[in-house]
Length: 257
Image (tube, rainbow, N blue to C red; front, side):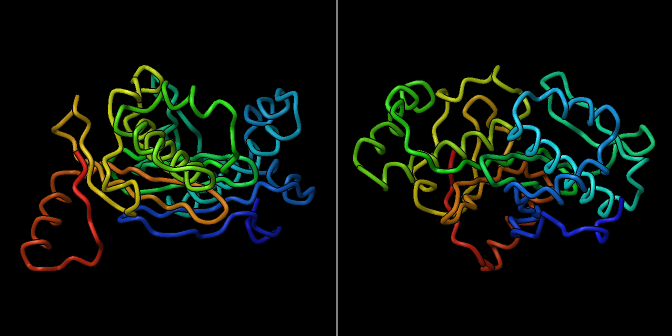
């Protein structure tokens, strides 16, 4: 299936450091949904049919097809050569001719929006959430946020509270997804530092894993909240250190640890 054979339902969204992020349009569209099925493997089509509701079926098909198209372009391979494996905790990785591909990716979807992030190396996580006011904000806050985060939420009301809630939520989810340990890692055991409550980008280290550095960026817009977290490898840390020493600071940074 060629992406040129039908209107693409995915488009470039933004760059985030060395990562590229693609937006996937998940609004109902019969033509795009039919085209998406042509990208899927037989196993994926079976899985798609197993979803009892049309919304989850549509989101799975459109996101997986877009992921396949993007990976085929990046890896220079045909769709028939591409398959997927998963880690012990369920995180996907790409295979070309059954061999692991040299690329990291992660995807997330919520409502009518999907995001696919790719980077050449290092662990990666992305999360997107449509902002929907919830009656269980207080209960969720107690379950997933630490004391400083809960205090920050208590100081704001209305739309600002919803905005901050989903900002903190997506940043935490992106970090957990990047770490790749699934729900075995308690998100309430680390906090999003104040530098990222308003700022767009910062460096982060888990208190439990201080040797690993993560580049975290909030990439939400008016339609949704979203964040991306990318593991920085030693050569990237050295490059950033050199840039700071040379006075090159194109982005406003917050050190978050």
